[in-house]
Length: 356
Ligand SMILES: [Zn+2]
Ligand SMILES: [Zn+2]
Image (cartoon, rainbow, N blue to C red; front, side, top):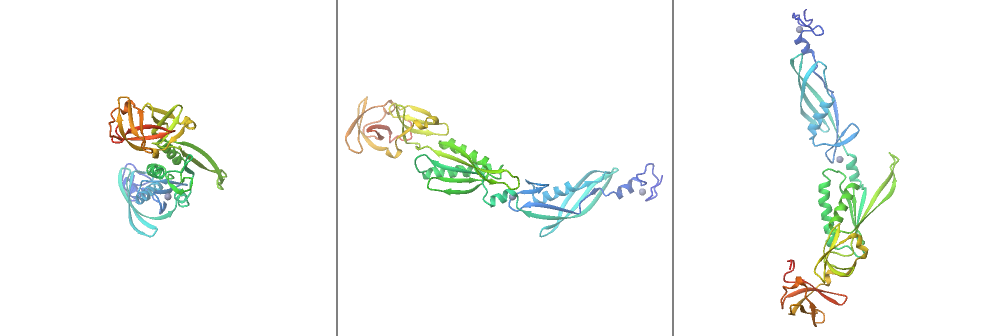
């Protein structure tokens, strides 16, 4: 049998051609003459099919990937690989050189193609929501029966900033679209309800208080016909803070810690710690403020009693000594608080912060 192209005699012919003439005629791969890609101008999202997806690829890598996706190897071709490099770019038009290597009937083949790539820059839906100030949830930070303190607002701002930094790595909508400081508290507008919920749980965990949630109907989505809701989350910090004094049951105690689960007070009579659940919130009463703490001097001491000067009247007062205050000496300064006419020694001022 003879090859109809070169006339060479061969045992086996392919569509009338010898092995090498057949391989030479092969196109190896069908490459589209033109490719269009769409990038978000603000983030790393790309438009693929009818979806916007985030990509870790560079623009060049994504273009190469698109070319590979849209190319179809010839049915006789095997082991086809593409090397794709940009040749030049003018505005939104890019020219790419594609070098295809493969085998046809075990004969190595190389082909070169030029492709025009059209680069479209647009705004992905998430970036356009961000740009328009879109939000799904509002977190309202309030304090019960009192204004928020500057320190509480600063602590909240810091926690939110830190969490958003973390959450936004996996959730593009985890952004703060607006922060409004009002007379009654601070409103935080979040792009993502899920992120807002996580943040409010962490805040409650660290600062205590009570969480509430209510959806509000905002209208109707014209494209889907669905009702549009936004969620208002309220975090109400307690009427008291660490350092304040509470009366609870028969106890008077100073708050030494509070978190999302419990309030811990140190009983001023016994010096022992008491853990109180937030369910008891309505049974707690603020007995004194941490600003009511005064400093005075120990004027005399016996094994059972301690004498201090009332910081208001300068009258000496005798108090029963608590076991945990045994190491206080005459002349020491102590912190004290007056609640309902009664004086309580808190700790030795000198040893403040040290467990005594
Ligand atoms: Zn031939
Ligand atoms: Zn975007």
